[in-house]
Length: 379
Image 1 (tube, one colour):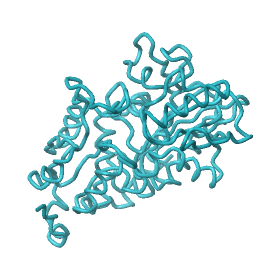
Image 2: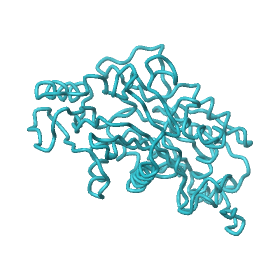
Image 3: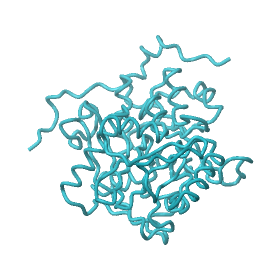
Image 4: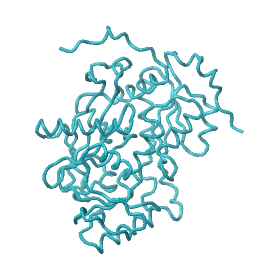
């Protein structure tokens, strides 16, 4: 029988104000040596991390004196946590399947009273459900493309949806279920693709107006009191948030033109068939302002904590449409979009990772806030 940590003991534990912590990196790791189980989609586990990413995170966290351990986020995780007793967990776990899988590890850590980084249970549960996320954004007047969820695949198409359309799984990430067949140009293609998604991924298909314009992604870091806990308070604006430079994805030259799917995402930056990555994007100041505003608003409306990355694409008239948000953005050096954005403005990988750590730790009372009078003054 697993016994949770004693909450009263945890409240007074010396780990609260220790200078150095034992940090557990929680992740699901790709295992290319074993065949996929029968009956799962061909791109199942595509959003799991490589062990090299975990190694990079450990090295970055250890630069500030902390010790680290890697724990696989599988069914043995509760017992591994009990054995290792980490002070805090750096969470990049994707979960093991089912609805809201990215909320599985945060829910476990909440139950055990173990501090962790990043967004909490509800946010991670909602953000992976693209349809629900779009409904929230639409109701709060964020611009999204017309969309419809197909549960059976044969539902009547709403009149506001005009071909070409884009069809993808409603509850997956990392371009899963997205290839050149995701763009459908007529009723026959729509039905075939929707049924394929429903049957292959065992979840609804999200159908939305295809957006033919430029594609961007924008990272957000911080919260209202970020300056009080960050090692780099000068990164953050008055509202406590840092907007990373806008990254443009040129998918026109990728292995899947105009489709930023798994095949394109899996290629190394600069490799043949990979998209072009341009950061900072060459855009008008007014468009940049809109993109960063929409990314921050998308972040806030889901109660996202500390870090996120939001994808936005222009429609046929050049208007931005918010597509989706990643509340567990990738952190692979020189590869993940957020890391490319940080590098473009001279932020070291180690500093990015440590700021995510300290923002998370501060929410659990593990850091004393800086005196506001000591904050650097903006010129």
